[in-house]
Amino acid sequence: MTATPAWPPQSAPRLHVETQLGDGVSVPVDGNPAHYLISVMRVKPDDIVLLFDGRSGEWAARARDIRKRDLILECISQTKAPESVPDFWLCCAPIKKGRIDLIAEKACELGVAKLQPVLTRRAVVDKLNLDRLHSHLVEAAEQCGRTSLPDLATMVKLDALLRDWPQDRHLFFADETGGAPLAAAFAAHPGPAAFLIGPEGGFDPAEREAIRAHPRAVAVSLGPRILRAETAAIAATAAWMTLNGDWH
Ligand code: SAM
Image (cartoon, rainbow, N blue to C red; front, side):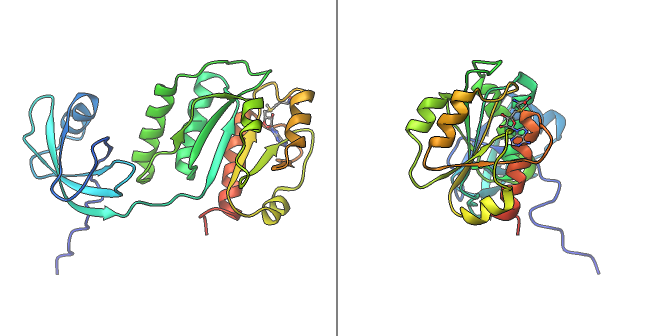
């Protein structure tokens, strides 16, 4: 007895698009995404490509009008409802190029809802290429099956972040000089959360004092060793997802 083919096809490529998706919507694709589908994935007429736009869930779309550099993808059925990722923000100081890219990619895979760059006094880097970070978020979402991208906020200074911090959100502050054990801190502070990670040089004493003085801040330890910023960001997010997130 022949097995019924899986739907959607396991091998179907996934693509993030800006077009609002829906039944029968035709999505014109050109540029790099078209090159990837036509030349790398060798998509043929009627092949299925999975699309997501960040708002409408995931849709199976049939390829048609394939030309050398562009094609049309016609939505035929919704394959995933819009998912709700846990209400978790990752706030991190800008660190060197490849490493902030790693944070962006892993934050997306781990289920972060928002990535908030924070400029601190000892940051080695004081500007970020948001377009490059956005493309890392798109690639990670295409790979991991998310149907929405994390919000990528523009960089703010630490004092502005603290001044404008939302009343209903815990700010777990990764303090390498010491803080509460993680599991106890998470258990005592359920609900909307964020993690704040410092740069390669850490926070300066005045910054640390200002963060600790914030009514929503909870200083936590990530163990007895000093972690690189990207390690701290990934480990802290994974720990939160395990205990308070959607890794049930
Ligand atoms: N100032 C640190 C030192 O003593 O060398 C370096 C900062 S560390 C490379 C970057 C950031 O990761 C820190 O600011 C902190 O937010 C976080 N971090 C690293 N290790 C940590 C730990 N054991 N506990 C809590 N946070 C940690």
